[in-house]
Length: 169
Image 1 (tube, rainbow, N blue to C red):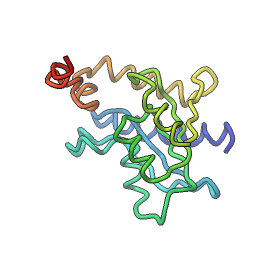
Image 2: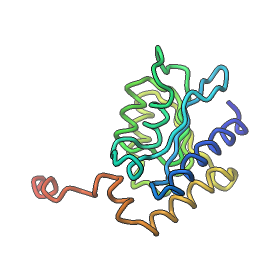
Image 3: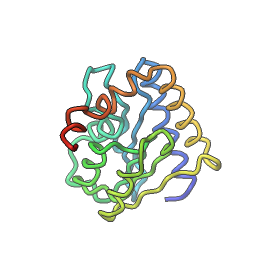
């Protein structure tokens, strides 16, 4: 896939993220694409607020929209924000070979990228200086974090568990 393809599909993922934001939800979108045909197999967005479901992140909703497939071994997942561990695990479990990410600035660390790359998944982080779609994803997410920090924290699992931190001591 070309840089133009990445821009096109990330723009679709951004539109999903903006839809969620417009509905009062977390602005994270995902699009699953067939590598041979370029067909969008599924698109979705975070539905924590809309469905009250904490596990339907943008990537999960795109997978849900794609439905049943024999496998996903020739697909690319486009995501507006670096995947969390739940979504990263799903990407690895279903054998998605490539992930294109718009925003790594609003994520907490590079651990999930390291995890995917260690499993042979190609990870492409778009350059916000060259990609309008990536720039828009970063800007929207940063805006949301400022406007609704409590919802941002809830979406990421509520922050570190103090009981687990105490157990490590």
